[in-house]
Image (cartoon, rainbow, N blue to C red; front, side):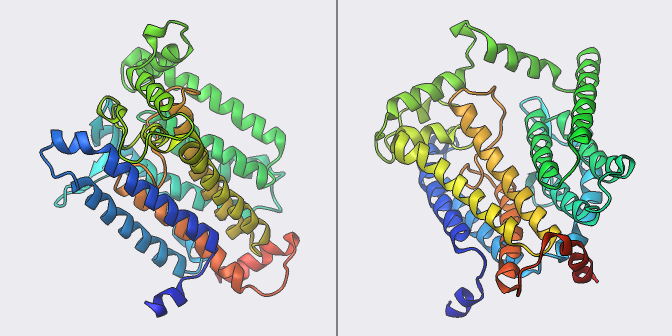
Length: 392
């Protein structure tokens, strides 16, 4: 054990945030799955043990990923990106459907399902970090930028949007932030935004005309969100509001949630409202916000310290999309945005989604680990040369 702890490196605060979020997940999932266990004829502790196993496997993934030198992920980025496109296509036409959306692939023989968008999201940010680091001196060339940086985003987001618009929009906006940090020209970003809006309009129209896709669901969710009629408020949003109101400032106490028996998916999409109901707005609500912001802050510090452009863009890109997803989930729970179906990273009950999140965190910690070992202060102008040397 001592040897294992000695080999565990990287930002200690990020490690601490991961551990605390995992503990919060165990307590919240155990409380929120009581009704589910009853309906599924399982023991009360069944989903707690399952979540514990998932999180322990996730921590193992983080440890293994952070032991790999982060420059190796530059090579893996091409493989992951190339693999994600056919997987997304397969999911779109032959994937497992849930709630009218085709988002999952079932692995033959083992029966495990995973969202290909999770792999595609990770692969895309790894690939973009690689491309941005290699093209820092060529960002004025719109043709090269469009082909090597913008096109991969359009392809991945377009394939994901047909079945999971919220994830596609989250990825697209996170990419926009990464591009801004990566010094993409503002006029090029506006051009990308205009192109994305045009393509989405075409996608929506085709979906409405052909019936293929989820245009009807998108339209209904936006109408319900913008409607002033209280009868149009989605049932799950109404129950989430009741849970938050019941929690108040101090909460009802661990395990004392009443809305977990009425709220659909209280252990995944709407676990944040259950946490507020039990632990209150101060500790439960603002406490989680603080943890995710702390994670993002440490990643931004890592971005500023990293001697190589690839590692800097990799850390900030992966961390921002994780935190952005968390805040979108919270915003849905408090009815600030339409229902999206996004889970709360590391807290919601899950399997493969937690593992892909842990892989992303492991990569961030890999950057942190080697930043700690780096000697000297490398200026931003030297990063491209050093990155090329590190990949040889």
